[in-house]
Image 1 (cartoon, rainbow, N blue to C red):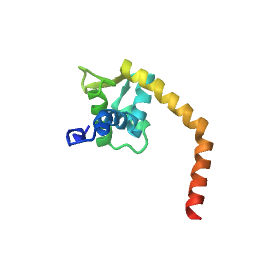
Image 2: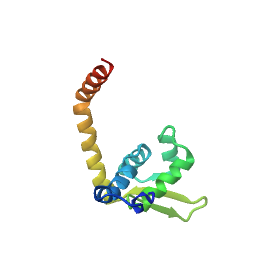
Image 3: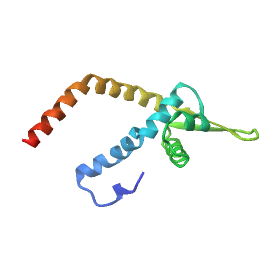
Length: 127
């Protein structure tokens, strides 16, 4: 997370800033994909790399570290050669997953309304 909350902010910004930072972190497309994979079962780095199209190794590593730092994943290193590393969703991540699936259900229910609202807005703007 950045230090944007440390610059002078209005009262509203000061209250919202930590929340916005957290939502930005957990709602990112890479974070959601990783959390969904880790909710099902412990997952290894290479499994994640193969199962998430378009993610670079650098972005995968960064996102895993951030999710671990935020307490959403635990990382277990097994003393084998080569080392085996597994990522597992925490209870916080499992609770978050419930909210994400609720958001998905909302988006699916309201998708036609949103598409229509966008169409009407764009049409009015063009007139």
